[in-house]
Length: 192
Image 1: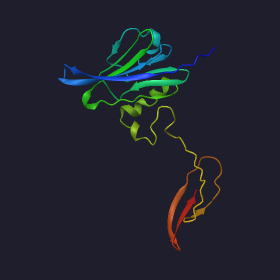
Image 2: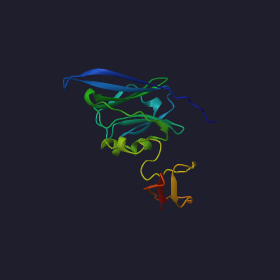
Image 3: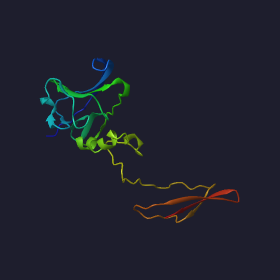
Image 4: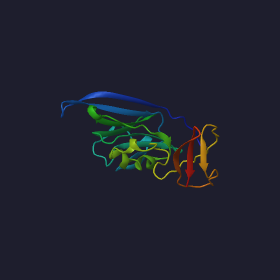
């Protein structure tokens, strides 16, 4: 029998003094209200969220993210870099967290479909600072090489569209060119 879950999470943060630098750090915590999820910890692998135990600090992971997922629903906490990851669980919830310098604290909280691979595939772009420059930055949907379907449902009386009005199903490159005006009406050419 398959069980359905409503996953609620609470986001908390706190400012802490960073004694080594004389600055402050920020801790972001994601508290997820179940212990049935699988948690992925980079460099350590998958673990049941119920077996995380008391809070564990992880200062030097290969990537700064933690993922929690169940039945193709993914939540997590992600950063370009950080000082520390931390995670733990009690009898009714589990916590994922990141500690960062307050000067450059920036995190992502994916809530989407999939598992840890959805986050892991984005980490190279995140670590290079290129994730937010993508056309549609997302953890749950393809970004590179993804083609959007375009369907033109309108007819314009004030624009003269020229070119092949029927473009078959499939992927193709289109050239849209403003050819100027004819008798006060803009002329736009659409070709392959």
